[in-house]
Structure formats: structure tokens, C-alpha cells
Length: 498
Ligand code: NAD
Image 1 (cartoon, protein in one colour):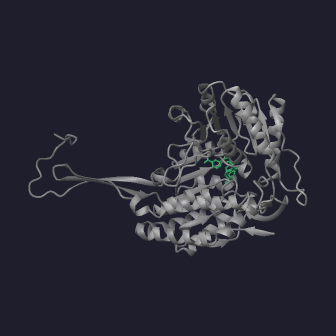
Image 2 (tube, rainbow, N blue to C red):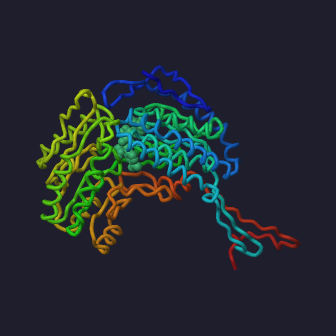
Image 3 (cartoon, rainbow, N blue to C red):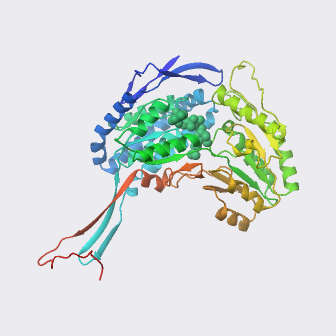
């Protein structure tokens, strides 16, 4: 048993609330640790530290801030094995996938290393007689990020790396389900040379989140998690005058055209649907084959591929995916499978009831496959977030595209085709934020920006890339002149360009 503490003012700080939450080992289904849940006063303490550190940090020139990022990147790379194993031990994803989680976070740190260039403003010489105009991007002050369980390394880096590089200080409230990796990242960030108070972490549940949303000194909040909570965070945060971006749930579709390379499609979809036990907001849990022949071929091949998957512990090097994060989450997934059956979808493969020898209490669930899922079914309309692939058959590209376009979520979508024209038309018209063309999981690289549409994201500005820099800074525009001699008469008319 271990205890995960807060991290305030550059050091681990014991919780004082007396409230804790269990951290499970999903492989064994046993409690392995406790995480302290913060009070409002503990959040206030973190804010106090972040506020005290912010003026000097924003006054540190961007190149020096970038050097901390470079060193942090080096340290995380040096600790990659430790971090990946720690991540798997609390999350349940296989270690190779945890390395990907850390690496995708590092990609954003790499992006943040370019902050001197990214913060350069705009300049117009001679905007008027003897007048120049320039703009600069300035940090907001104390900022915060609230993150989900499913990417405990990547998502904190999406937010904290860009915000801190911009000159803000940061308070991270990670998921209480797997907080150990975020805590190690805070320690490594200090080791990289960041002053105490620049990056703090408070653990907690709704009480800590509410304290963040209500604190007057926190100027911006980034959230990633489920949609109802994203909507709550967005509404409360903006009501309290904060800048908020809040990413929510997803139900991503993969359209399979009759001309697609079916072998490639099956390889792509099996990984995208079942990888990380489907616990990815960019997973592909809905396949939409176009035409009966395409659908029959796809379902047969997918059934074969899914039956061949190996579910194992997170340290099993040959496993395709590990356990899900909690028993409550497994029950939720199982209840959606039951719902699909009762709604009349064809359950071709049932992953329920999987037991692993020696790990009978682990949170395992095998792959499931449904055919003939209909858009009016609730099991289709809602996010399952598990290793369940639903096949919705369509007669035309137009019909297929209407499903992701009309769905309440609009995070990612993919089309598999050999037709450039069909792909181009689809990418342009589909009502979804991130599109893959023969790419099953179209997560943009770190120097582009990540964000869905509809109930997958509340707020207008995306994560990382240029949008991230915009989110974490405010623009100041300066109009200057240096008059000499007679500057003319006083004027009561708004200045205009004659
Ligand atoms: P979650 O919404 O349960 O938790 C996210 C965060 O909110 C956690 O830090 C949690 O402590 C906090 N929280 C939980 N309940 C709260 C409450 N009542 N009030 C205030 N805060 C609360 O999400 P999760 O289960 O950790 O993560 C999975 C979800 O995240 C899925 O819906 C997934 O699609 C989504 N997700 C979205 C993206 C994206 O970019 N769109 C990325 C990853 C995950």
C-alpha cells in the first residue's frame, strides 16, 4: 500500500482532509494505494504558491523557459521505462501502449520547446503617419488543468507544457484513479530546473474541481473527461469569469467504402476499436461499411481478427490489451452489451465473463462485436468506452456520413477508401472535428491542434499546437508614435485614416 500526495511549492505534501480514494491494481482487482482528496483550503494553498511563482516565471525569457522544457524532455526519456510501468500498474493498459501515452505527451513538450518562436507577435510599420502597431502574447497568470484517467501522462502534458512555456504557472488536478505518473512528472519537472510553484498538483474529486472553478486567482481552466462533467466545468468556469476549454466524450465512426483495401481496414479497425480496451477518446467503436457485400466481408474478417486477440495483464508482452480501469467501469461496459442485445443488435462475439487464470479478480473483459446496430438504439447513441465494436450498415456514402454527422459526439471520424474524390468530399462536409483518411485514429501531431465538435468539446479553442498557445495567452496590441515638434490641434473625432 502506498499513498499519493499532493505536490505544492516544489514538494510532496500530505493531504489533510482525511478523505482518500482507493487506487486499484486492475490486473488483480485489488486496492494497492490511496490518494489524498484535497479540500478547498489545499487548492487555495496550491494557488498561493502558483501565484507567488508566476511574476518571476513570466519574466524569465522564453528561451530559458524552453531550456527547462528541453531538460524535462531528456529526463522523461531517461525515466521512460519507470513511467510506463507505473502507468500500466494503475491504468491497466499494456506497457508498450503506456510508452505511447508518455511519448505523445513528450511530443507536446517538444512543441513547447519552440515557445520563443511561438510567442512572437505581429508588427505593422507605418500603420499611420509615424505610427507603428505591434501585438504581443502575454501569459494569463495562474492556470489549471483537470484530466481523465485514460491518458495520465499525455493529457497533463497537453495542457501544462504549453501553459507553462507561455509563462503561466499551473495547477494540475489529475484523475484520482491513476495519479502516480502525474506526480512523478511534477517531480521531474522540478528536477529539470523549474522554480517551485510553477507546476503544482492537487488530487481530488468534485470538491477539488469546484474549488478550482471558484478560485478568483485561477484565470483559465482546461478540462478533459466525460461530456456531462465537461459541460459542467465549462458552464461553472465561464460563469466565474474564467477562460475554459472542456473536451468531452466521443463515439467515433469508421466509414468503409466498397473500394477500400479490406485487409488493411481490418488491421486498422481491430487496433483502433480494441486497443487500450477501447478506453480512448479517439478509439473507433463504430464501423459503417457501405453496401451489403462490404459489410458481410468486413464482419466476417473482423470476427476472425477479434477472436484472435489476446487479453492479458498489462505486463504481458504478447497481450493486445489489458484490463479496464475499474470493476464499476467493467460493469458499465457489460450493461451496454446487455442493452445492445435487448435492443435487437446481433451480438457476434461476447467478451463478458472473461477470467484470466491467476488473475480471477482482475477487471478483464474480452472483445465484443455487434452487427446490425441501428442509429435509434441507445447503446449506439451513448459512449461505451470499452472493447466493443458496433457495426452500423449503410447503403451509400451519403447515408454512412450522416451517422457521425448527426451523432451527439463529434470527436473523430475516419473514412477508408481508394477514392480521392470521395475522401475529399467527406472530409469537407462531415460534422466532426478530426478526420482520418485511411488513418483510423486521427489524433493530430503536437504542432497541430486537437479538438472535437458538438458534445465532444465545449469552448472554441483546441488543445496544443497554435490553438493551445492562443488558449494560454492573451493578446495585447500597442499603437505607438514618437511625435516631434507640432502635433496639431486637439481632436474630438475618433481617429480615422484619411
Ligand atoms: P471523468 O469525467 O469521470 O473524469 C474526468 C475528471 O473530472 C477527473 O479528474 C475527475 O476527478 C473529475 N470529476 C469526476 N467527477 C466529477 C464531478 N462530478 N464534478 C467535477 N469533476 C469531476 O472522465 P474519466 O472517466 O476519467 O475519463 C474518460 C472520459 O474522458 C471519456 O468520456 C472519454 O471520452 C473522455 N476523454 C475525452 C478526451 C477528449 O479529448 N475529447 C480525451 C480523453 C478522454
